[in-house]
Length: 321
Image (cartoon, rainbow, N blue to C red):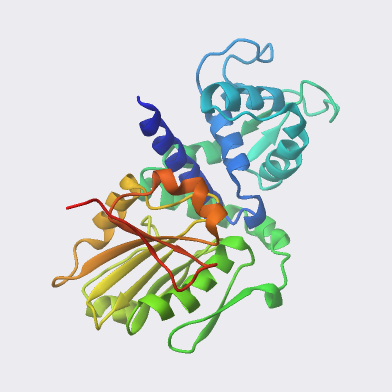
């Protein structure tokens, strides 16, 4: 596998894990690349040296040190040893609290400061991860987990509704999204991008980091012959312009998720079977230049880029000819 193929596969897997965590109502502020890497490491089945005595694979039990070594050797992520506390507090502890991982399954009385403290993924979470590319299998597993853990989710739902990100739709209707950087960018897309670049915009679909589907305009979807399901890998936001007969597929990119070639093909597969001749425009959206610079080498040709800090401008990635 060439470096580019590896990077695309790796980024795709990170995004899928983060989407799964979101569907399980994992706390939004901890749905990070770091947490996804911890999950990937604990899912690994490769035989390895230097693990705990009872472990042959990271899936059998991974210490923080083992996860850091995996990130360096297998993912070329040069995490320093002083990242240990961040992994423990912001990722592993949160996965354990959310019942997606188990701490010290081999010795529940082990002291918390022991160098042998290790983590494994919960069996039902492993099932979901192994079905991550099979929506028809994954969906019932997620539903079962959500029903089983209603009490846990109720306790974790601590954010004040008044702190939600309030978005004004083109119709004037206001809706609230869960707090966080990703949804703040979505607010900019709905209220600013649409105003500058979509003639007579109609919002068809809007996601939410905590609840996936926040808004789906079924009447307008029916008019253009498009059927969507929350179980599909939909773009973050979908607009339609009746004046231009054009669909706008927009991804809000904060940590992962620009429209690279594979993602473009996925979206085309979902939105391609439309009634009549409707063109699809693909747009990767970023808060600023710094965010865009991190992902510019992955973005697909014949797509567009929009930066919220320069709302009146747009960048076209276009091949000559």
